[in-house]
Length: 505
Length: 62
Image 1 (cartoon, one colour):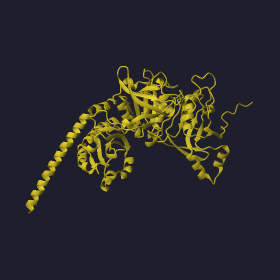
Image 2 (cartoon, helix red, strand yellow):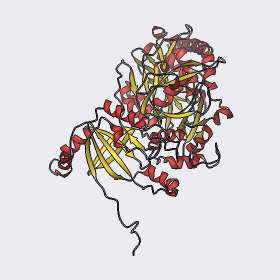
Image 3 (cartoon, chains in turn blue, orange):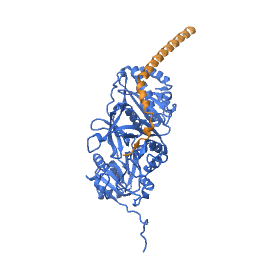
C-alpha cells in the first residue's frame, strides 16, 4: 500500500455566476450539530437586506481565495485545531448588473471588448465578501460601498474614513470604496478586535502602513495585559488592551471619556470628519460587559441655534444625529442614533440606539456610550477638545464683533492634512500674495488643527493650528481670510496677532 | 515746509497709534468676554480627557 498523498494536490478553482438569491443565507451551509447561536446568523440576514438596497443582481463566486486576514487567523489559532481547516476562503463579488455564467465567460474571454466589459463590471461593482471556512462565523473581510449622501428624510450622510480597495477577478481589476467589516469568529477575535481592525484601515493607508490583521491585534493586545486568563480563544479586550494593540500597530490611542451628548457629538464630528474611524465602547444601561463598534460615518441634520442666549455662535456638532457603525453582531454601515441619556443617579451621558433591520429600536438595542478610542498618527498630539477650547472663544468673539452674523456664526473644528488644505487654497479667494504666503511661506504640521468660522453664506475665516503641540492657544500658525468682509479685516488682524499668528488675506 | 510735513506725519502717526491701541483694547475686551462666556463649555471639553482606571478596564465582549 501507499499512504494517502496528502499535500500533493492543489485545490481546484472555479468561478461561478449566480443570480442574487432572495434567500441569501441559504448559500451558507448550516454547521452540523446543535448550533449554539441562532442560524442563520444575523450578519447574513443584514447583508441580504443591505445588498438588496444596493440593488445587487448577480454574485460571482470564487471558490478559492487566499485572504491575508484569515491566513493570519489560521496561523495563530486554527492550524492547531484537530479539524483540518483549509487555509483558503471563498469570495463573493456583488454586481448591480444582471448576467449569467455564459455572459461571464464572454466578458472574460472577449479580447476585443475588454475595455467596455471592464467598464460594465466596474460600473455595477458592489464590492466583495470573503467567506471563511469557519462553520459558525463565515463572514470574513467584507468591503461594500456606502449609501449616497442624501437620506430619504432629507438628512446628509458622510463617510470620510472609507477608502478605495481593489479586487481582482477574471483578469479584471475592480475597485470599491468602503471600509472593511467582518464577523467576529470568537476564536481569534471578539467585537473589540474587529472594531479596532476596521478602525485602523484608513489611517494606516494615509500613514503608509500595512493594517494589522485581527490575529496581530489580538496578539499585541494580550502581550502585556490580559483581561482574563487566556488570550485565545478571545474573551474580548478591555480599553487598555485596545490601546496596547493600537501602539503595536504604530499608532497612538487617544481615549476620550463620554461626558454628555453635546461634548460627545463634538468629539465624534471632529474625529470622523477628519477621516478617523473611532472605536466606540458602549455598555448596556444596566452595566455589565460592554461592546465595541467602529464609527465609520455620520448623519447630519440642521445646525441648531444655541439654547443659551448668551452664546453668539452655532456649533456645527449640533447637526450630528447619528453615526454609521460597523457592528460585528449586525453588519456594515448600521445606523446608531445618538441622544441624551440620564442615569438613575442623575449622571448625564450619550445614548446609542442601534437600528436593526428587522425591528424598530427597542430597549435591547439601547446602549450608553462610555468612551471613544481613536487610533491616531503619533505626531497628532492636540486633541479635538483643545482645538475646540480656542475655537469656542473665537466663535463667541466673532459673534460679538461681526454684528450682522451675531447668533449665526458657525463653529466647526476638525483636523485636515496640510497638503489637502493647501491644494484647496486656490479656491479660497485669497490675493496672489496671500496664496503665495500660505503655500510657500507658512510652516505647517502634517496634520493641522482647523478651526472654521463660517457665516450663513460660507466660511469667514480659518485658524490653522500646529497639531504636533498639545495646547491650542500658543500653537496658532495662521488665520486665513475666507469671505470675511473688508470692514473686519483689521479686527481679525489684531485677533490673529493676539493669538501669536499671522493673518493671510 | 519740511518741518510742517514732519509735524503732519507725526500727528498722523500718533492718531494712527491711538486708533490701533483703542482697536486692540476693544478686541482684547471682546476676546476676554468671549473666553469667560464659553468657560463652562471649555471645562466640559477638558473633562473628557480624564480617563479613570475603571474605564480603562472596561471589558468589551459581546
